[in-house]
Image (tube, rainbow, N blue to C red; front, side, top):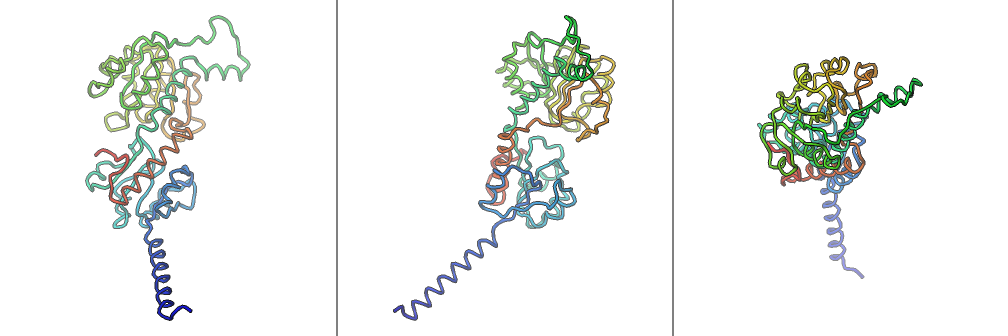
Length: 346
């Protein structure tokens, strides 16, 4: 027979364990994930240590997200809603860390995060390959007039004679890359298989990576004048907004192809429409534009020499899964007060 003392001890131990478990559940950090369609791999990683919650609606408005911020210990910010001091103010004193699920940070008030020394993560490099693939695809599609050809098929205007729909050769061409960061370097690596004549690049300063890739540093004006293909691979900042405009487009060859996989506002879009209409340049391939989504009746979509895709640069299953996992690691580390896997470099 179990003694009364032993019964008391067992009950006490059971109660203590129950309280400890309950306390652990209560103390689990809460992480707000701002988009219900965030890849499951990242969400599952968060759920190992945290309680994960989402906005009720999809897509959620920024206002709906802001109402949930005070409840969060951490946030995985999925989407290009403005991320600024207003969010941080609402998070006081509970919020400990935020990570975006993106490489571009033009929608983030970096100066405000830096001023507060607030833990901020992002997901660069992991999407370089996917975005570079889109860039090369747009280059080929625009140079070989894929969109124009398809529209002619739709109109029963397929001619097929020897001079019909002639495009531009990539082999032997001069390719210019504006911005030789991670994505720009990956584009350059992809181009090696096309036997281009030369790769040139522009930016703030020459980079050792450029020499390793066999690329030559030139001024932006020199790049625009010399290039048969121009890739835009710089982040959107005050200094790069409308970098490509009526003046710079006029510096390009009339046979040149412009590819943008960075941000739409780097190009003055009205100037681009005019340039494509009057033959200032041959064609453009755009994964990004202004605004997004682009209205169905927008002038760009009416142009045969504009190849448009709806911001699909990082849209592969593996890339988005990897981005969500990195963002989740960032948030978990930030909540714990540890260094993030991929912190934004202030």
